[in-house]
Amino acid sequence: MNLRTKLAAGIIMLAGVTAAQATTYTVDGMFNEPMVPGTANDTEFHGMFDANWDGSTWTVSNFSGRMNESMQGGYLASGADYVNYGTPSGAMGDGNHVNDQIADIGTTGLYMLTLDQNLQQMDDGSRVTATVFKENTSDVYMGGGYDSPMMMMDSMKYTDGSGDVNENAYFTLVFDHDGMGNITSLGLQTAAAVVDGMIYGDCTVGSLMGGGSMCMAAEPMAVSMMGGTAISLDINAVSAVPVPAAAWLFGGALMSLFGANRRKKVLPA
Image 1 (spheres, rainbow, N blue to C red):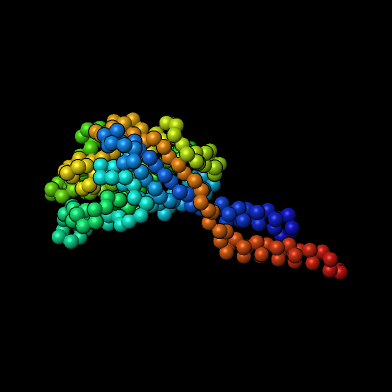
Image 2 (cartoon, rainbow, N blue to C red):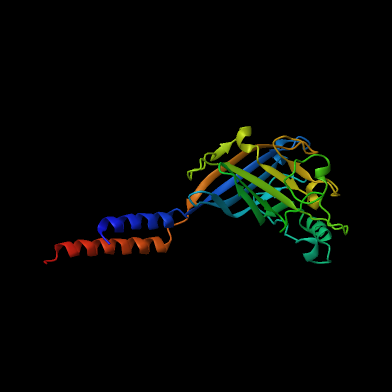
């Protein structure tokens, strides 16, 4: 193998190693709640995720965050969160996770939701959407699922037919990209063209005053029952994952090959 062939092979292999690097991002989503007095109680989501460009598609991982229930108060930067009580078939405590959550509200007085379950995502070639849930299921609204427009009847909680319901919640982030590995919607975005895919839904016990079967939700069209509207999305890079050891080892091996090739040329015949 001559030097030119070695160099070409090395570049191809090294590109394959470095193209798989993931970057950590922060995400901050804001939703205006016109039915709740004052902007201090607007719904906020604050979290982090990793995103990786493999040369053709973005993949989101390690997506998690916290979200407040606007009817119960504003976002709390610290303090205990709700725990995830699981789906009806895997409920804890007395077998009814709704009662468990009611007890949690009464005990802590806090209404922060931890969303870190059941990541769903899609890259359509120019836009990535990624959704993370409170429970390990995508069933949020009546009839199942979570991504239908939030009209009146979609604001009802999901039930499995036995009378138990999923006290679930979710947040959907979006980011645009140019198809060449560059995210084009970083920083604070308020234009509808960017935030029109950002949605939240909250069907937990504390989402509305008195609990019941209704959900809080917001999306860009403000068609949900409470009129909540997506207003801003802020995504920023935190750090790139370090180049893996394999890349450094491969680089060292490649340099050794070049060195060997050079020594061969200077040795006497």
